[in-house]
Image (cartoon, rainbow, N blue to C red; front, side):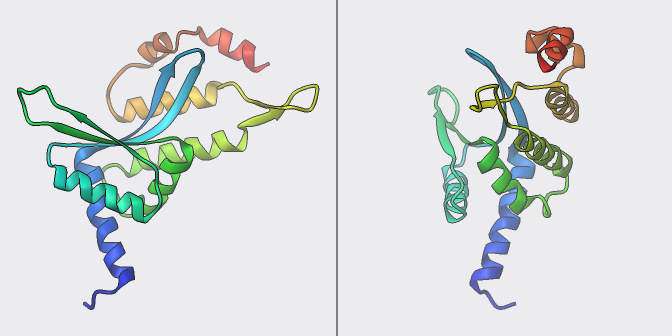
Length: 175
């Protein structure tokens, strides 16, 4: 097989998909600050800085924004983490790697579905014609619950407790 730019990038995407399968997480994170935020993300963690640098190179080729973190306790090997956060960056990466993923294809599809449905209803006009961000609804929380179920991490009751709002309050806010 002759190496050209196209199949070289395909090979790199295949390699990167394998890294996500083995060293990565595809999920939706719940952040509580001044307001609740459900953020899609992809995270890759490894102790080999060469692997991390190759991942960063690939993300740069496709102009996908990421952040890199280093955890070094001084006791164990340093641990590097790459985070791709937000709807635009995560969707861009998932569209590239989802056809190649095997074990994490369900998570990738679920996160893409969450992003698409959230973008479709993201803004609404208020009574004065200004655009306002729509609050999260039961559908959004359903995606969050489903991704946690796919990860086998917590029960729906724990998720509802962590959200910090009774379901009846969420429904009332939607009306």
